[in-house]
Length: 212
Image (cartoon, rainbow, N blue to C red; front, side, top):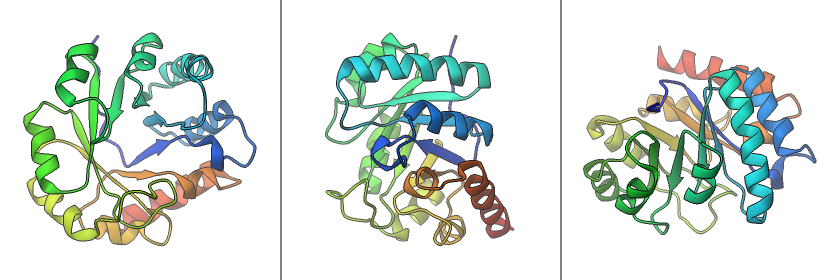
């Protein structure tokens, strides 16, 4: 079965460091309750066995909900848990190598911080790209924010889906949409919310109004 990047508004990511003591599975359950259609498993401080166990459980949950499941960085775990795809950064395995490992039927996403990287990812066969970090963010402390100019460039030039990410929250998502964002990757603002489905509903309402 070939997987594809869904047409959707919010791209959710996990981060147990910000989950208010909730398990990653509980966080994912709340995302699915809100109707999220794509979730990336992005955990930095867990060992491989723990990640694989969580990813297998999340795979079952997302499959039942019809949600696309992406694993960050770890191609081996993505394959072992039968995820829909994998997302890699500029310093991870090269796109061509990732594609060779996962095959043509799985989704491959690539983080980009400038248009030259986006062009290379598109030419290399990426299914979607990440555009950012647009603004300063606690989850990407080593990568300086690229600002809205790159977002506008991607919106005008990119011929594959892209996810706008980095510092996107209730206060900034409208500006992101006005600068060309259609799908926003949001981490802290959602995971730190006590009522995650309510937070997602508010974000969606703001995005819809900004798009008018």
